[in-house]
Image (cartoon, rainbow, N blue to C red; front, side, top):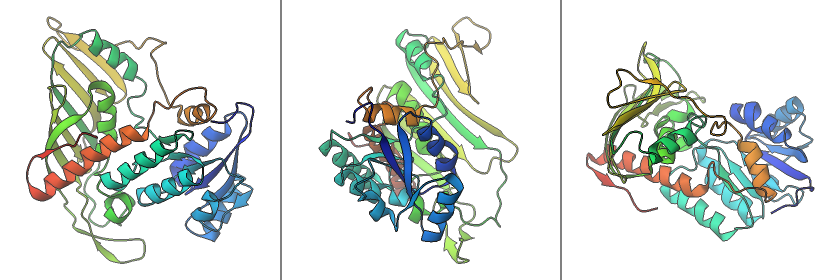
Amino acid sequence: MTSGKQVIRVGIVGAGANTREKHIPGLRAQAGVEVVCVANRSRASSEKVAAELGIPQVAADWRALVNDAGIDAVMIGTWPYLHCPVSLAALAAGKHVLTEARLAMNLAEARQMHAAALARPDLVAQVVPAPFTLGVDRTVQRLLREGFVGRLLSIEVRVADGRFLDPAAPLNWRQDAELSGLSVMSLGIWYESLMRWVGEASSVIAKGRTFVTQRVDAAGRLRAVRVPEHVSVLADMACGAQACFTISAVSGLYKSSEIVLFGSEGTLRFADGELSGGRRGDAVLQPVPIPAEEAGGWRVEEEFISAIRGLEAVSHTRFAEGVKYMAFTEAVAISMAEGREIALCAC
């Protein structure tokens, strides 16, 4: 770890929208942190970002950045296809790593990354967490411990983005398996959130549908689309509950994101940022207050820097949890491809 007084110099590999809007400002907000170098896909792109954001150095490529002795930590803001190689190289070079979600392209890469992190316990390895439930996580965890819902029986996760199918839209990175890997839309992110509450799944069976099977990419090429635009997953959870996930990019006028926990004595519902609940005998669900001491929020960059300085351990999110959600998304992909139930490995 690094002394609390020492300046921490961060290099950026891939300054995409989320990195520009959240990570770079979040890192600069920490005392004694400098964003000193950037490497994008091209020299011209890197120089443009450096000029726009006031980053003093431009690296020839990500390998040069990772091996720069003047850099202490690497923020990886690329699409998932580079998360594994950059993380492995950065850890080997003695750099702390913060990588965007999704952790990797597949489970094998995720395991490589986790093993590399375990081999360097002196370095911080963190993946950007699923943000949606951060504000209510501790309250939900407490209510479940206290038996608010009784025995947890079933779980519904429904995510609909309120868009109609657009057959003419170009291929985006989330639809490109060569860039995004086996993940399907936001399925892994919502599963990560659910894992914080109730733990992981033990098996899955899934069906998915791609309605537009070819789209034009940024280079003007017609490409096959293998990532579904609608997926339904039925999962047995290790805690004994059954979970149903429905993630849709073709929900038309319906837009909502929710997790509902159904128990023998009560119900908890997280929907569009708000938590509500009720117990046996109540007529309707009522808002659940979030005590000030339980309220969470976005502090990814603060946690990363504090962990480097030895002031706290990473909680959101370690590579270990990333391996678990990659195991889930890979099992879903295999189930869709083979039409059978898939048992999840013990990761």
